[in-house]
Amino acid sequence: MGRTGLFDLEKHFAFYSAYHRNPINIAIHGLFVWPIVFSALIFLYFTPPFFGLPNFEFLLFGNYFVLVWNFGFLITLVYSVFYACLDLKAGSLAAFLCVFCWVASSFVAVQLGWSLAWKVVLVVQLVCWTGQFIGHGVFEKRAPALLDNLIQAFVMAPFFVLLEALQVVFGYEPYPGFHSIVQAKVEANIEEWQESKQRLIS
Image 1 (spheres, rainbow, N blue to C red):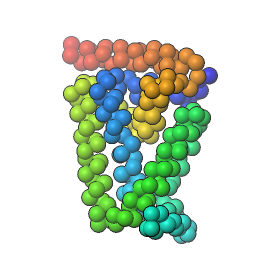
Image 2: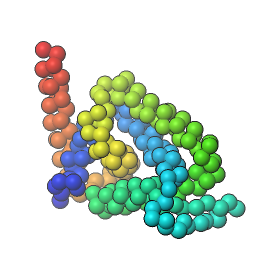
Image 3: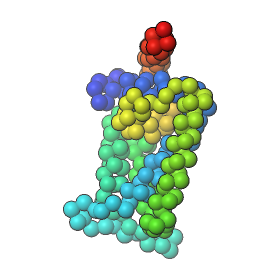
């Protein structure tokens, strides 16, 4: 059964899907969205810890690395809880991927060190964002969702990329009829967009 407000998965997914209809653009986002998350967490690893909380040290592959309770952890926690609330099954998988990215990015950040890490993050971000803008400009021929709803685009994109993949590969939907309902809302969104574009031309 659908929810309302902040946890209205139908509304959120329809908004995202309306901007991602072209198969090539969808594939580009599937390739680039999670690396953006991962590299952002590498950058956030170097932010200071909250309230002087002690770090958690690991030994992995003969190398020590530290999990820091900082902004990277906070964002991981917020995203994970939100995704799980949107849909327990797919959201829990997305939450697991968020936590995995946080731990793995912490390991990578320690190995790289700040002097190299920020350069790697910059390159990854530039490549991934450029790829997505090309996907929208060349293939989708519609501006990215972030230009209309910045927060929703940033928060929702990782989960919806995963949800699309689960749908395509396994035919998954959060509940029966979900995708048909979303499809109707997507068509309404696109029709409204085309009408507004036509009014601007005329």
